[in-house]
Image (cartoon, rainbow, N blue to C red):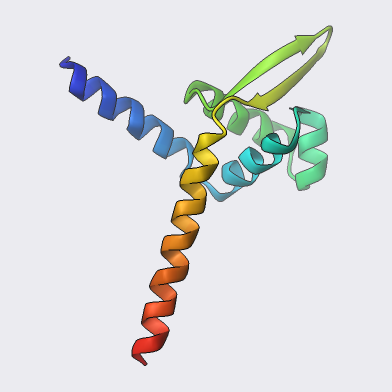
Length: 104
């Protein structure tokens, strides 16, 4: 595989990890502090198995990492710059709607 193809495959993996609204919420929560699966599931009112699966996907994409403390595993955001991308998306959406509304 050519290096450029590898780069785009890695990008696609990250964008795939970002393609779920709940995973985006989880990233924002992980920006605040490290979370364990149980606490994050309770905070988001979501089943622990879903939180665990989504954390695994975010970890696989390289956006978070885990730290084991005895039996407790905490997850933290390792790529806070990804939330800058989310801010860019939000600004783009707001501008789009602003333009659409001004055309009416």
